[in-house]
Image (cartoon, rainbow, N blue to C red; front, top):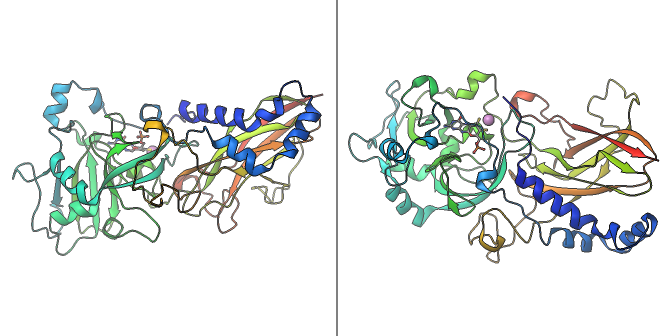
Length: 420
Ligand SMILES: Nc1nc2c(c(=O)[nH]1)N[C@H]1C(S)=C(S)[C@@H](COP(=O)(O)O)O[C@H]1N2
Ligand SMILES: [Mo]
């Protein structure tokens, strides 16, 4: 699988952040030393305020990185065909049925045939009472960079499961999307029934998602309806959702299981560079920015380390735990949330936000946080530059879960030349 570059949108945001964050350094006519002095006079809080005042946080729908399979891709079909196969809101239907290969008991199976499958109107009816909105970063466990940061809206899966009236012998939920009636193209995933019915403390529900950043979910993003699993990597969030099956099977049947992935993995905390110059002059502070994906372990720090190239490092410290890491500033919540939101304003009733629209805590789990810092007094030479996160328990990336197949989280390395 090709690794997607950071989305244009995330990059644009960071350039803007960087410009504002470091603006003072270039202040009219100041030499490097004076600029540093100007920086030093300003409190960090003031600079951060300035830095974030204009910053965008959410990724535009069409600027998300995309991971998709299907020949043809459902959203590229003609409108007529999409209407026929139920991939437009007018004709979309979701079946909720017992697994025919298991003894799961479901009193009210919802099927197209019986004419009681859930249609979009029915979903909107449920939404009036049960809709939730929350922030979540979409990330593929096999890719280094997140695919995009979204404000997702949907109806909790459990509200639809209960419509089907399951009674006994249900241990898992299987689900899959449109696959051109070709079993080989089926992309499927699964969850323990318990996760669908109840959320761990502080976590969001699994939703049947129909909006992203306040707008209808596009076909490319998985619309009309996709599954959205807040705590998991992207492969659990099946697009073009049409079928939910309740089963007594205790094992997962995820497409990604067949690809040597750990399919039970919560998202990990990890760090990526966004802005770092390849070359810089000695004597000026060097701006570096990035983002941290906040996984199940939370985020306490983002850090950078600059090390002369070729300098040996003890083999028994592969994760550089003894290196002189420097703390970056984790930026506070933005004033302008960006994405497609009118005036960059969040709608009311976002999960874990106060009535006044302020986050109850920051950064939030399963989202991103931006960070920025300055490297100062770097002598001329060639350097390796690293970034890493520290989670809430004090684990330095890639610990406590360094294995790649449950989520890419290797420490990122870049290079930088400082000229004399
Ligand atoms: N139907 C379907 N859903 C899918 C996929 C797919 O190939 N087909 N890819 C999955 C994977 S592996 C990821 S990482 C996410 C990516 O979501 P995005 O393309 O909206 O960024 O979608 C998931 N949902
Ligand atoms: Mo993925």
